[in-house]
Image 1 (cartoon, chains in turn green, yellow):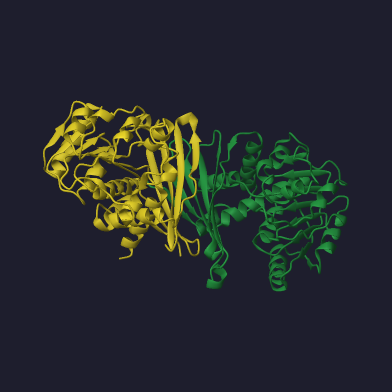
Image 2 (image 1 turned 135 degrees about the vertical axis):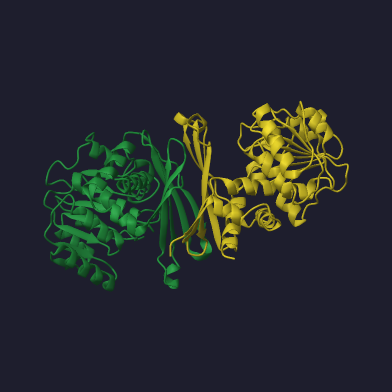
Length: 319
Length: 319
């Protein structure tokens, strides 16, 4: 029997922003933090002549009868050809027989979805109960983070900041229409951070723009822009001001993202006081304990999220 | 536009044992030996509880506008479930934009084909002009090697040896019918090697059964069973008796297969006198120079063969 082939539109109809999809991703984080996940190193291929890169990620969870192999590409000259820079697909294989079960031609949608859902999970355990919500960045994740946040928090206004006025304007219009709440556009990231209690950073910045003296009691930051060693959104000094620091996987965050910069600069001596999201979701570490705490969750993106969301799509397709 | 999905039967119709397919694989070897191929390390996932393994291989050739990512699995308890142990598929992506172009659901057929074609290329440059042909082993490659050999040498009898009488019998019947020549079944590998001048070894043996004192002037051996560090068909002493030693990729053969055993046992001091098949095919190193030479080619299987054959399939599908 040949594997099922699902196209993007079918996949979008099967898996959206739902509590069930979120729960599947939560289980992936919990199993990872429990030590039940084989997360092999990423296979990476570079195409320097066209500023291209292809990553192959996978993760196998003990006891799960299938797993995903995700191929994701970024070719940064594609926009000059009028094409999207990102592409991708997922394969689902049986973990019992090796047989290919499904090919998910999602064009990267499931990565967007599972990344948004991870943000919601971080908010669930770390954000204030009634947050004032702000987003820095105006790309795809600026949208998915807010859609996912709706699953775990209610909020009646949205603060946004971004460096490209046109892109920010489009984002503001979309969110106003989608959420039916006021969207406040900020002139600078400082005023946004100072006025909000849940800040989501989703930019591809290489320059740490978010400063430590903007922090205030009751603030939670979810930072997800820095998915490579050279990317950084938060000044490493930000880590000094945190009551709780959480990441998706200590092993990966020691190699890339905000935490690896904080380690490198000596702001953090090691990751022994950094918890994993899966530990908070399992209850083996506490999340936010008071409205006054300042908290941070860094998300770099894990193969186990891909395996979880791909399995969810297949499960839905069989209902 | 979604990628093309081709199924095994379509793929078999598009790509078979042809001089054109062989030439495509030859170009892959030549470009590799010229230093024009990016061959990242294999991504490997183990499933110890069910004796399973999944390998992801890829290779990018400079100037080729697409490349393959191959997923191949071996789950060695599958036969107890009545399923084949091997599975696989190939993805073809644009090397210019990263866009997935095709999904080849070949169930491992293209791996069999490109492995057979590599054997024919080895015979083309190293086998005697009028060989007496022998095959040790009676599995899939015992068939593909002989079918491919037909492209480059004519022979009027086939000698075979294998350890499973039933499997040898089936193989003998198939080859008699397919080639319409006498098939001689040997009682032991020694008599086969002594009577043949082109010997192909295709067993998964962990025990080096082929001995140095069986060698004789004019013999060529193509050895392809040892595709993992623990596998070995040739006693390492065999390497002492060779006039020409060739492999598919020195880098890979230093890590696994016959050559790595010969290095480990000190029979070969290093690989400086071992040529690559691509060097012979390009003419930068000579192949067989007399009917008396004793020669060896070891083939461990390369991602660049996968990229070459996958591109060939796509090319044929567009004709």
